[in-house]
Structure formats: C-alpha cells, structure tokens
Length: 488
Image 1 (spheres, rainbow, N blue to C red):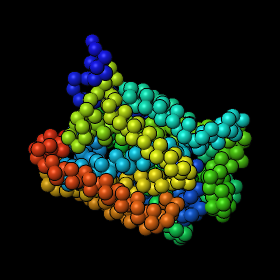
Image 2: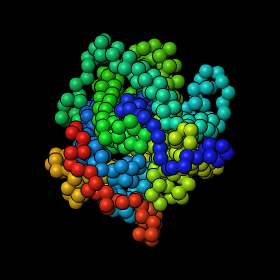
Image 3: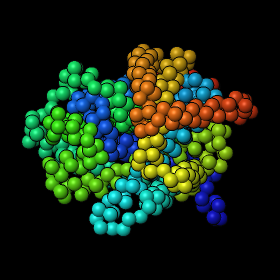
Image 4: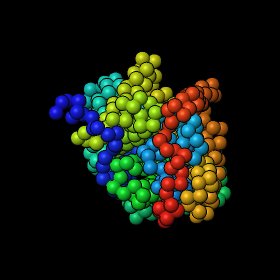
C-alpha cells in the first residue's frame, strides 16, 4: 500500500461511534466553563446588572432552549455535517447557505484566534509565576497550535477522550467552590438578587445579556458531529439538550455561588475593580492558596480544551464545504485509518497560523486586542447564524410539511428567533464595549463579516446549477416522513 493510499480513504465519509456523552464533552468543552466563570462572569457582574447576573444565564438558556427544539426537530431531515451551513441551505436556499458557511468559518476562525491569543499570555503568566522563563506569548501559542493540529488530524474519539478529562477537571474545582460557599452560607448569607425583578433589570441589562449569551458559544455544534455519531437521529438531540442544560445550570449556579462568596455589594465592587483576578481571589479566600494554583493551571487547560473543540468544529465546516462544492473537493478527503477530515483539519490549522502570524507581525496585544477583538467578532457572527438558523427551521417546515408538530416546528422556533434577535440587537448596540475598542473598529469588524458572507452568496449565485451547494437539496426536503422526527 502506498503512502498516499494510507492517508486517504477512497470515499469522503467521516467515521465514528460517538455517543451523546462524547459529543457533550466536546461541545461543553468549547464553552470553556471555567474560563467563562473567570472571564465573562466578572464583566457581567461589574459592568452588567450586578449581583443579579446569574439570572441572565437562566434567561439565555431558555431562549436557546426554544432554538434547540426546532434545531433538533430538523436534524433528521438534514443528513449532512455542517450544522448552520446545512440548516440554512435547506431552509433558506443555496446562496444564503454558502454565505452562512463562509460566515461560520470566519466566526470559528475568530474564536480560535481569540483563545490562541489569550492562552499564550496565560501560559507565560503561569510559567513565570512558578519561577520559569518568560517567553513571547506566541511561542506558547505555537506549541499548542501544533498539539491541536495533531489531535485534530487523528480520529475524533481521541479528541473526545482528551476533552473529557480536561472538562471534568475544570468543572470539578468550581463545583467544590460552589459546595463550600453554599455549605458555609456565603459571606453575608446566600444571595437572592437573581430572584428580584428590580435587580435583574437594574444596571446595564444589555451588556449583561451580551456577556451571558456569548458564554454559550459552541453549544449548537452537536449537529456538526452527526456523521460521527453512533445514532444521529437520537444522539444529536440528546447531546444538544444535555449540553445546554449542563452549561446553563453550571453557569447560573456557579455565578450565584461566587456572588454569595463576597456578598452582593462586595461582589460588584470586586468584579468591577479586579475582573481579571476575581475568580482566583475567590478561590484562594474560600479554598486556600493551593486551590488557587490549581485554578491557574486549569484555566490554561480549559482554554486548550476550547481551542481543540472549536478546531474540530471548524474542520468539519471545511469538510462539508469540500463535499458540496463550496471549497476544493480535496478538503473532503478522509483519513483511511483515523476516519478523520485530516485535509480539512490541516486547512484550519494553516488558517489559524496565518491569523496569529499577522497579529504577531502587527504587534497586537494578545489579550487587550487579539482576544477582545476576535471574541467580539465571534459573538456577533454566532448570533447572526443562530438567528438565520431559527428562520431556516421555520421556513423549512412550513414549505416541506415533513413534520406537523406545531410546538416543534413553529412556536418554539419563533420564540427562539425573537429572543435571539433581541440578543443580536443588544450585541450590535453594545459591540464597541464588547471588543474594547472604538466605534470605527466595531464598524470595520461588522463590515468584514458582511463581506465574508457576501462572498459566499456571490459564489453560489455565480456557480448556480453548474456546482450545486448540496446534492439533492431540494429533492431531499420530503425524503423523511413525519414519524422520523425525534419525539423530544
């Protein structure tokens, strides 16, 4: 057997036997729960609606729950990897579908760039804190990029096992903090601010919602792994609901515990004054210095887990586009032994390398600029994709009639659309705050996302019937009978 034949499978088909638990590990890892508690939560408390911020996670989880109902109902009728791309293509047409695919690629490239910048600075701070040498942030980022590339090249189940270990570790330390704070009754009693409507609506509610919804980025990626799932029609819906429930409960309870650890007023003051060390100080105060060191290490592994998870998601977008004519067909090749989209994985690694290299040459700060700008870009992009997907679900079922359950195909998706549209508007209004930059920078980033989307739309229109975006897209609308839809 030649080297070429060992690397490439004869058919462009992904393989795997992932169960709901494995997919949940990858999706929740992308949400980076510990990083959210350490990064987004202090900002939501300090700059948002204060001690009532835990309620924002509950609100966003409910909205995303409505989204998930329609998302899962449509899953059996979208037999391709690609998530946003394939949903929007089937519901709103080929041009907008390819435009969404390009937007998704830009979005996941941005979120990877954000965490690559952050993790480089975090590792350097961790190493120097333990007496090690100080190296440029991009050295550490380059090492992790190579490791992510290796794992992404291999079988998806290896990534799943790695993410599972890292995820359990990062969640465990926060759960310990939650239990200790709750058992001791907090600093001034357990907080009840999240139950008060006046406190929930106080302060900058828009900023609070923006940081809360951004914390859920990645939960929708369950559908990306449908080709590698053991039983897609059952596994994908279960994984989607499980991931949303785990992330939503974890964020809300842990944020409430952190607020209780300080007391309402003190929590707002500390989060506003020292957002970067808010969680670390909380852990040291309640669990001791050793636990603080553990959190410092787990923050790095949490970010690494998020990078690996988003890499796997982005690679499957490259793969889906290669399969459907939106990108060179070579990207849809799969590895004979690993059954992985190795060519697509290499493409994503190369794109990440180019983006980080440009940031290094430009002399951008890894946290204040690379992380802030790229994370804001990703948040805006994902919200646009979520809104379009909700609309695609409604249109798809209205046109095809393959599922006539009113709640699953009309009411829940419509409520999700309205809620996500509000979140999108709030994010656009507060976008300069989210990226930590000027209005001009915000307009520039928004314009870039519009251009990327337009390129995909124009490409689909130019190619037309000569290179269809998805084989049998229209014909497949009624391929599945109503009974095939999951009854969840």
